[in-house]
Amino acid sequence: MARRRPPAHLTSIMTGIRITYMKANLPFTALRTFESVARLRGFGRAAEELGVTQSAVSQHVRALEDWLDRRLLIRGTGRAVPTPEGERLAAAVAEGFGQVAALCHELRADPGESPTIGLSCLPGFAVNWLFPRLVHFDQRHPDYPVSIVTTAALASFADGEADIAIRYGLGNYPGLHVERLMSERIFPVCAPALLQSGPPLTEPADLALHTMLYDEIADIGGNPPTWDYWAAETGTALPRPARMRRFGQSNMVVQAAERGLGVALGREPLVIDALVAGRLVRPFAGLVASQFAYWVVCPSAALKSARIRAFRDWLVEEVARQPPVPGA
Image (cartoon, rainbow, N blue to C red; front, top):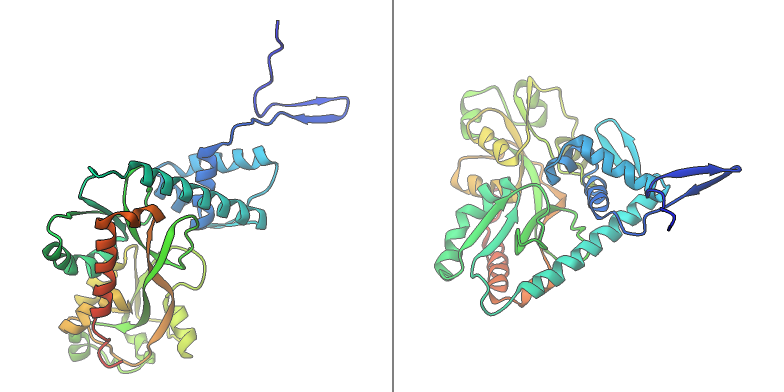
């Protein structure tokens, strides 16, 4: 009778020798979970992206570390930073899944494919920049309807969730076609009524008399466009505001500013229409280039499709038509 092999993670101690039986098959779920944690720098954000509990994410990562017998993450309060080995593994996983997504997209594409364009993007970008312009694409390409999924997570191209995505950050998406759509600049903005009837607001020191609106941007590396980043780049000492309000979505920050609820740090693509229309104004100078940008992301094979190329080209044209920041 054949001797039964011990379970994958069973460890035996025999005559002082530690024998670990490792499973030959790669733990794909754990690898994907770890890549999400490493990219988003947190278990909570990864759990939200993957649609599972934070406990499940933690268990997958711990199992992967045990399987490799390597520490992959440095855990801290509210965040997790990959070790050098973890960085290498996360990059390899991202590139591998990106290549799989590209091949699946190529295999699924055929002359009878659906004309619908599946787009994934952030809610704030969709509300403040994309939706007001999308009618132009519909008028030019009425045979290509656009289906939009607004999410903070990178789309899963392999399972057909999206054909193309517009992501925000540093552009690190291994294994995928990535091209910069537009950069951004940041600067304080507020409703005109705040200048007309509120306390003085002519210089940064006057923020002490106002409510400051904060956008909770996920930690995805680099220096995110926060109030602290703006202050450092402009050499400004930020005062303690009369009140602070924090929002989890950038479109909510813009809406709060338009309603006169406080002073926001405007991100150019998200506030340009409101500035041109006069719903927002710049109370004082101080325009800074952000390290982050908006990126067109898709499997390389997707650009072989006429409908995807048409949408990508239209996006580029819309960016070229974007008006300048008033007073810049």
